[in-house]
Every structure is written in C-alpha cells, then in structure tokens.
Length: 271
Length: 183
Image (cartoon, rainbow over all chains, first blue to last red):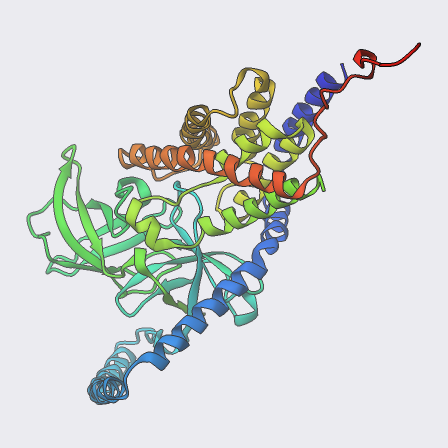
C-alpha cells in the first residue's frame, strides 16, 4: 500500500514540476537555467585548464627549427597584411570622403570591435546548433551580437551569463541571416534552419533567391546588412547547387565559409 | 555504505551530461552527441526505489535542459516515464541477463529522444530534423544498448566491493541437531 502511494506521489510530483517549469515566465526560466547550469562551472573550468595545459605542452614539443620557420612565415604574412591594411585604410578614407560629398552616413567599421573567445561546450542535444563560449556580460557581450571567425560568419550570441555566452550557429532555426550573392545582380536570400543537412553542419540552405540563371555554383555569399544583427559584408559561404522551389523562388545549398563543426576560437563583434 | 551507489550515480550522470557538450570530434565522427542518460535511468530504476529513481531522472533532465536551448522541464517527461515504467515492471524484467539489459538500453536510447522530439513539436519549437535524424537515433540506441550492461557491471561490482553483504543463512538448524548422550 505504502509502495503504491510512493509511486503515485512521485508521478504527481513529476507532473506538477513539469507543468510549473514549462509555464514559468521566460525571465524566471532562464534564471533557473543559469542556476542549474552553474553546477557545471567547475567542469568547464577544468576542461579549459586542461586544454590550455595540452596546448602549452604541445608548444614545448615543437622543435626550435620548426618554430623559427613558423615565426618567419608569420612575419612575412604580417608584412603583407600591413600593406593590405594600408591600402584598405586609403580606400576607406576615399570612401568616407565620397560619402561626405554625397551626404551619406559614414559606414561604421567592425574590425576594431572584435573580442576573441574560446569554445567551451556544444549543444548536448541533436535538435539545435549552439555552442558555449568563455566570455559573457562581464566582457561586454550581450544577446544578438554577430559571431565570426577569420573565414566567415559563425552565428549570433544567445543567452548571456556573466562568464559564458551561448552562440546560436548559422543553420539553427533561431539564427536567420539575410545574405546576398556576390554576382552582378546581388541576389538576396535568407538562411533559416529549415533546409539544413542534419548530419553535415557545414551545409545550409538559402531560400527566397530570385529566379534567374545568374546564381551559379562557386559564387560566394556575404551578409546583406538587412536586419539588426549582422553588418554588411561578412563572408557566409559558397553556392553548391540551386533549384527552383515550386516556380516561386530559387533555393540554394551553400557550404559555409567557417568550419562550424571544428570551431575552437571565435570573435564576437561588440557594439 | 548504502549511499555510495546513489551518490556515484549522480556523479556519473553529472559527468555524462557534461561530456555530451564536449568531445566534438566524436560528434563529428558519428554525427550526433551521445546521450548516456537513458541507460543510467534504466539502471537506477531496476536497482533502486521509486524515490531515488524519480529524483535521479528529474535531476538528470534538469541538468540536460540547463545546458541546451530547450525550455526547462522539456526532458523531464521522457526520462521520468522511462524510469517510472521500468520500475513498475521491475519484477518482470530479467535484470541480470545481458540481452535484457542491451535491449532495454537500445529501446531507451531511441525512445527518449523520440518522445522529446514529439514534445518539442507539440510545443511548436523549430527543430533540425530530417532523414539524418534516423541515423542519430540509431547511434543513440546502439550506444545506450552497449552502455546499459556496462553500467550494471560497473555499479554492481562497486556495490559488491564497498557495501556490506547480507550474511548467508547457514545450513545449521538447532532444532534438527542430533544430541548425543542421555536425555
């Protein structure tokens, strides 16, 4: 009798708890989530320290000859990048001058607003594409900021705690990106999570492109700047193939420029 | 030392949830993060009381939801009902048999994500689902099928090593003793 009563109590408790938790206001729910997630902070810290230790140990194992060759290569690359940056600065000045003459608003650059971050965890479920980075509100991060690598767009920031931030990756249904193809017609499209490959994280779909024959495999896509999250011109990916959807618009499959499956470090674009 | 196995179960679950967020190379290799919780819930339901079994599945579900974008509480029904029904049918399950452990783990590894998917769909959440999901469910089922007997082996061994064992009843019965001499 007592045994049966215990079962009923457990069942009732689980049911009530589920109903209460699912009906909590979003603010209270996210605060409770943060409190529960803080149980894992020691493990995240331990994993971060272990990763740093392994990195440093591997540096110690690199032969001096290889390290010097790498330094020379980086110096050469640095020189080339300095020259490219000078050229870019000249072009930017010219652009700003012309904008002033036309009474256009100055275009804000984003290169100086990037904050590096390390990936410390990934989504434990199969239904979404998110990851966690090791910087949070303490470092100036807030929700809906662009996240990228030197290769291209990665996603946008989601829930932010003091020391960690959830990044919603491109391809997740919650991360819509307006893009345009870099061809003569600058066809615009939209990346949503509806046509992504479940197993291959690097392939996503672009919808609502105009029906024309100018979108070809190999063409690159960049962010269009529409919407309030992503600035214009961040590389997104390359067109793999296209098909016309019900005679209404063109759909394209693209390979993302940033290797989302193998990310280690990212940049968060602060405001 | 009856607290040892329950404590260790919670520690293993804590680590299991954390490991689900790490080892992305394994995730890239098999195409899915491997969730170990269904097989752990099966072990708990078959070896412990309803109180601990329910508490275990609820705590595991809350930890999992805390690290995923799911709404808090989404994972409670699949994990709780798995533990609850296994506990109800405890007397019918051959818990010591390897094949029973394997099939239970396999079923739970497929069933728990499927029920979660249904709940999320009912809640109107947009999810990444396609033909690849079938593969992910198969991998999850197989991993839990293999891990379930391993949990039984590991925790039973631990219990045998650290917990007091009940004394076996000796064959000697005083009422059947043959008494010699004059009475």
